Length: 173
Ligand code: RP5
Image (cartoon, rainbow, N blue to C red; front, side, top):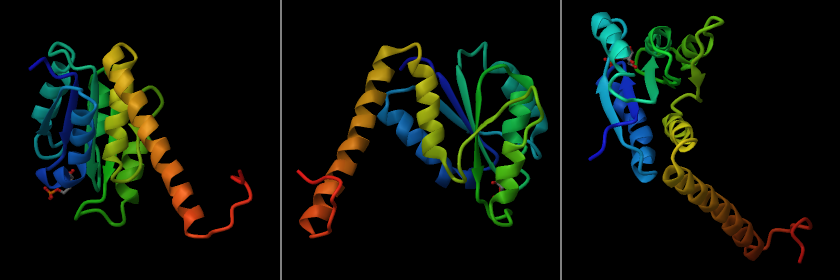
């Protein structure tokens, strides 16, 4: 096994049901990753040590998920210069998800976090792979094949709707 290039972290093990999707798509795209819990509020020392170690351990991108008062992605971004992708999680302590979205999204100038949609861990994984793919043709080829699959699914649903009898004057052949 080669060294992980993406670090997936989350504020609590309870976030794993969402964050697993980032792990799954990275596995599908052949990108090595590591995954652990780092809590900004419950283990602040670990947060600082983790963030300080990422570059020397060879990671290239961090995917960080948290819910409620979600400070983990922003605090990691405050320490490292690696790109940080934030995943707002709709957790048990979240009012409606907006608390987590805004905590991760509304970063001060100078400390960006690339924020995906609420529970959007799959997109976070894809974005991480796209960053890795800028310098890795194997990964970028897998991403191209993945996009082709997405296109084929849409084309298939267009055919099925036609077969089901829906009028569509746009795709008239
Ligand atoms: C956040 O609090 C975590 O990221 C999690 O989304 C939420 C709830 O954590 P638990 O109480 O389930 O451990 O810090």
